[in-house]
Image 1 (cartoon, rainbow over the protein chains, first blue to last red):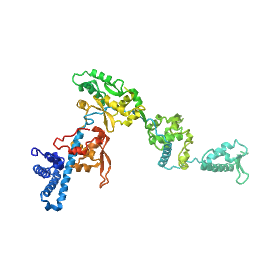
Image 2 (cartoon, helix red, strand yellow):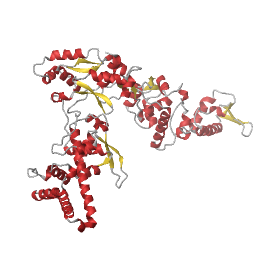
Image 3 (cartoon, each protein chain N blue to C red):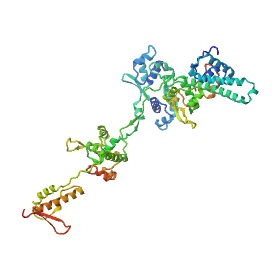
Image 4 (spheres, rainbow over the protein chains, first blue to last red):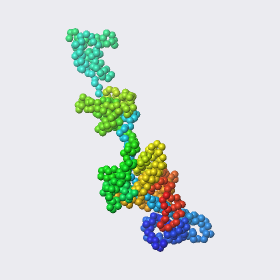
Amino acid sequence: MSDSLTLHLEGFDGPLDLLLELARSQKVDVARISILALVDQYLEVIEREQIRLELAADWLVMAAWLAWLKSRLLLPPEEVAGEEEDAEAQLVRLTERLAELEAMRRASLWLSRRPWLGHDVFPRGAPERFSTVDRSGVVADLPALLQAYVGARRRAIARRPYRPKPRRLWTVQEAIARLQALVGKLPSWQVLSRFLPDGGDPVERRAAVAATLIAGLEMAREGLVELRQDAPWGPIEVRGSVDG
Amino acid sequence: MDEALRIAEALVFASEKPVTRDVLAGVLPEGSDVDAVVDALVAAYGGRGVEVVEVAGGIVFRTAPDLAARLTRVIEAPRRLPRAAMEALAIIAYHQPCTRGDVEEIRGTALSQSSLEALLELGLIAPRGRRESPGRPALWGTTETFLEKFSLRQLTDLPKREELVTTETSGLLPLNGAP
Amino acid sequence: MDEALRIAEALVFASEKPVTRDVLAGVLPEGSDVDAVVDALVAAYGGRGVEVVEVAGGIVFRTAPDLAARLTRVIEAPRRLPRAAMEALAIIAYHQPCTRGDVEEIRGTALSQSSLEALLELGLIAPRGRRESPGRPALWGTTETFLEKFSLRQLTDLPKREELVTTETSGLLPLNGAP
């Protein structure tokens, strides 16, 4: 049988593959093959075949190891007393490995002869699903909403360059114009602070107070209004000049 | 069971698309009467859990409609709102009624039409008239659905703006009116 | 046709994946005998173009194996796995969880990346953690899809190792039949 085997190393998946094939050619259980015969066959094949150099390493390592194994097995037991066990153990190990590979190869073949899904048997081509996914809802949790609000505000602030709030400061000229417009219609004494413009923040209000006071003083100097203050820190009152 | 019928049954079962009578004819044994086979198949599945139906140019198996309705489970998979939409919603909730421009002003970035549309589609916001300013932009406010979804009895259940954003922060922002 | 049987037929027929008896029990009317319903379903489809088979822990409809040649005229079959990949798969099935190194040790040769990738791509194997040894190599095992692919009910349907080894050696590898 071995003579009729045409072996091409590249057709084998490594030295173990070849060894298994050679063992099979002995037509016995892998556990009972003759390792000596196996080694001879292997070495013969290696010598006969033209091995591509890049593929050679594995094959040659195996060949060297088998040659060593054979030499140990051929020597009379007493001459290899120290190494005998080693060689025996390795022999057992090789046999086990071949048996395992053989078993796995059978398993592989067994599997490939099963009815394959997609080759021998087919599933439903257009399966139906009985669940419909409702994506119309929305995850609504309040913390997320609030975080979004805070996040948006913070980000916007961080991005915005610092810009002092524009102030609307009441000028003396504006205060004079306002006083002139109003005071003529009010002949009796009025508290000066009533002539302040509406609104504004505290700073703007203080500016308006100052401007209105200066406007009152300026107009009093020109004789357009009269001012009086009954007590220190008391309200300042104003009225149109009796002469004017 | 007749061989042609077995083949037709297997093919219609395994095919991803409806099986046309032409395709069936190519697979059935020589000399089969395709129409008769189809009729036999339809008959074989009459009153069963699945039935044979003719759809767009071919035949397919379909679950019997009464069972399909019974077996169908609706799985709710609510979406998370994208960040931009969530922020827009929060701003509208706090500053309503407000325009898209207001939202952009507050977020400090443009708001895509799709974000606004997503909120509209979900029924979370609704138009609240127009602002009488140039361009008469639409005003937006939140809806009853918004309250329901977020488990709020009323808008005032939302924490106050000042509680969320510090005063110095809000001082920098030209914002009018509290919720 | 009995209502429980119609429901079981509809559910299993519609599904591409095996339906477990537990799932079936959940949809059948109160007090149904699930095993009896499954038996009735298997019997109803005996000898037909499609049949009920037990695979990967559940039941599922498959086309009858004898019709494969006809069906592949119109239904495209994926490529078969190359020998190296098949052997690697068999080794992983029997030695799981095992590393790529284990597979190479048993085959006595390096396992090509493409073989491993083919198995992964088909979903036949999946990572099963790492071995706590130098390099912490990934461990591999077979999947549910593996069971489905080869029409196995469970891993124990694989022939025992002894059955594989003790079979008489010959070039033709006589194999004992399927379970």
